[in-house]
Image (cartoon, helix red, strand yellow):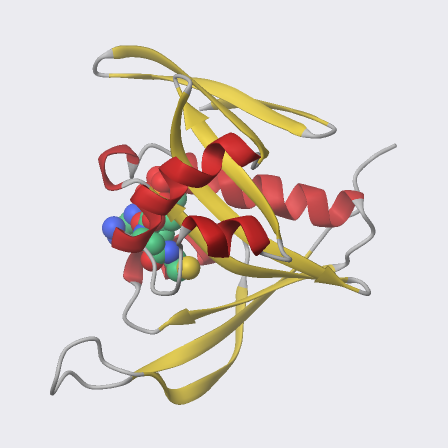
Length: 172
Ligand SMILES: CC(C)(COP(=O)(O)OP(=O)(O)OC[C@H]1O[C@@H](n2cnc3c(N)ncnc32)[C@H](O)[C@@H]1OP(=O)(O)O)[C@@H](O)C(=O)NCCC(=O)NCCS
């Protein structure tokens, strides 16, 4: 997958079985609210109603695959830390490098605005997300035992794993 990084825009392309595809990461805008409110509840716990999305105090990024909304990330910055709150890629678009592109874009934005570390937490059961984070250099710092309640009755609670990654200052 090729990519190019310019301030505010992160874009690239890749060739899959069905030909060439292009992707763009950009800040979420009001037109994204309705599609996100449909896509996100199946991917992430939490309230992703249009009202909640519209009133969110956090920064967000969306990724478009061939001009279609395919994923979302939400984060906030405090002092020199960038905290990833959520990241998700539509099921039909997963395993094509879009989660990686979204997270790289969030990390680049953190570095661009002076953050030195990116932090996140993830359920110990979320193999896909843990693999993504570790491949991007996140190191496990600790855990919160039993932090995530089971989704179904009788399902065991899962530990939250705490991860962080140092952010390199961007050249220029
Ligand atoms: C986690 C998630 C965002 C990954 O998105 P994605 O677009 O499928 O990830 P990518 O294709 O960019 O893969 C990035 C790396 O993670 C690894 N990975 C992705 N899915 C994986 C899976 N199901 N199992 C193991 N590793 C996986 C890949 O090996 C890949 O590494 P590579 O680029 O060296 O091949 C996606 O699975 C998702 O939306 N899950 C539901 C929401 C969620 O759980 N979010 C995280 C908690 S907020």
